[in-house]
Length: 182
Image (cartoon, rainbow, N blue to C red; front, side, top):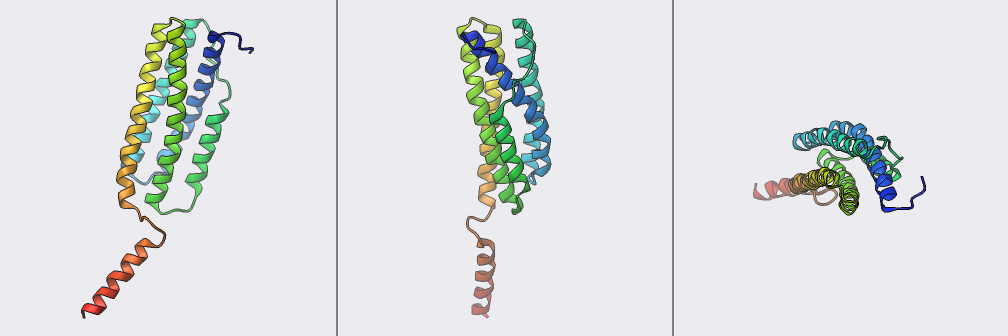
């Protein structure tokens, strides 16, 4: 598709986001399964439902525009999902793995926030207030998901070792202190 107008760019970007959402619909259950924190698992499961709604909203926008709801391979999301899959395969302590999964998920959220911000601006400029409203709703949900992940990360970061071998150091120090007291 040759992009010659803002409308063409808008359609192109919507197709990209539609494919990104389809990729996430497949990736989120894997992220939930790999999470050891119940709160994190629930956040991914809840966001899966929202992600399905995001894809449906894009389908609605395409339908209202008289366009076919089709995706254009989103290579950025493909890369982000691949990075997330690599994180899930790493050998890490549970809390650290959860923190790493959150980092991967937040990269996804930030990509989506940027994408939805742009297409919402295009819809507004093109005078499609209904689409702009749908896209704003999705944008706000992506921001909320990012904030939720921030909160979970802050809690997890308090619970995991701050340095390599830190848990052994604490155990060794406690044993040394017991010997000295005896």
